[in-house]
Image 1 (cartoon, rainbow, N blue to C red):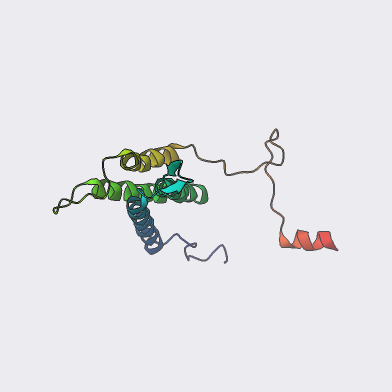
Image 2 (cartoon, helix red, strand yellow):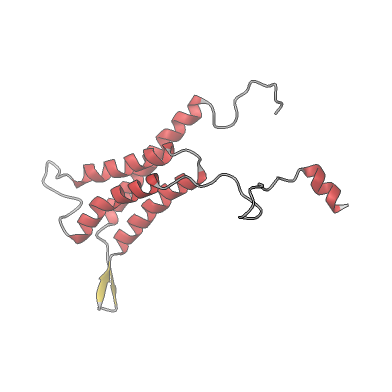
Length: 157
C-alpha cells in the first residue's frame, strides 16, 4: 500500500471497531455463562478430597481471555468490554429467578465464583502496559532494528 493512498489501515474502520467491541462483550458474556454453569463441578481425588475443577477451569478461562486481550492489543478497550460482559453476566446469574432457582448457590465455590471474575478483571485491567520496544541488550537503549527483505537476501549471498 502506498503512502499516498487514503484507504484506512486494517482494523481502523468504524465497522471493524464496533464489531470487535461487540465480539469482546459477547466473549465475556459467554465465558461468564460457562463459568457459572460449571463452577460447582468437582472431581474426587482417590476419595480423599474433592477438587473444584469447574471453579478452577472457569477462573483460568477468564484469566486467559482477559490476559490474552491485554497482551495482544495495545489498548485496554476490548479487555474492558470483555470484563464488563464477564462480570455483568455473573452478577445477573447470581440473582434468584422468578421461579426461585439459583445458578450460583451460597456455598464456598459459589462465593468464590461470584467475586473471582471481578478480582481477575481488576488485576488484569490495572496491570501496567507492557513495553512496546525491544532492546538488544537490557542495559542499552538502542532498539533492535528490523531487517528488510533486501538486506536478508544480500546477507545470504
